[in-house]
Every structure is written in structure tokens, then in C-alpha cells.
Length: 129
Image (cartoon, rainbow, N blue to C red; front, side, top):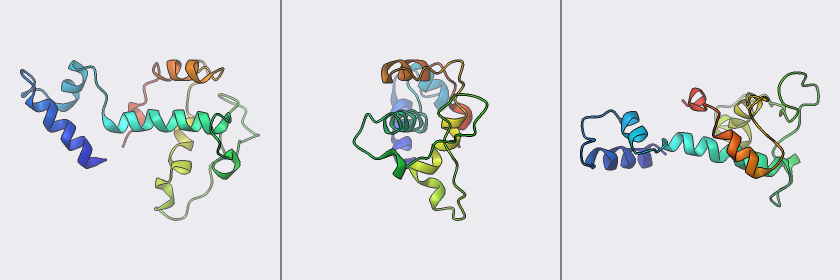
């Protein structure tokens, strides 16, 4: 991911008039998002598809719903204890905290289309490394 992001950095720097701008300003000028933010968005959409059965993957193999949740949205996921740092980079582990922190007053879980539309309203940049 770092290597692809470097390619995007170099490419945007070569565009006319953008050489002196910092990377994030170049992205906002071009109406682009960082690769890391795009991957995070893609991960959340895949999490939605798995949880709501829109793909032929058994959701029990990836996630377990947290039934004792009293705050936030009703689709909170159970966070497994991870004693190894390798496991923390797995899709099923890295998406849980972000998914559970989605604001229930903004996110619409009614359909995939409405989920994607409302997900764009959420500032996910605070969840980036």
C-alpha cells in the first residue's frame, strides 16, 4: 500500500501547478482521497456486504454480532482478543473498531446504496494510521 501511495504522490506532484503543494492539498485540489482512506471505505462496504448476506460468504466465519450493545447502532461487532500483532492486520480484526464507531445518527443501514451514500458523510480520516 505504501508503494502505491508513493506512486500517487509522485504523479500528483508532476501535474501542472501542483508541485509546491503538500500531498493532502494536492489530493483535495484534484478531488481525490488517499489510498488508505479508499481502502478503509472499501473495507467498511465489504463488512456491510458480509453482515447482510449480499455476498456468498458465511458471516459467522468473519464476525460475531455483539448482542449486549446498548449504545450506537444495533449492528456492533464483537471484538476478539488478539494476542499477536499479525492477527490485528486481518480484515476481520482491523475493521471491527471502525465499524463499531460508525455514528448511528448518520449511517443508514437500510440498503447498500444508502449505506455507501451516508458513509461518505462520515469523516474517516481520524481512523487512519
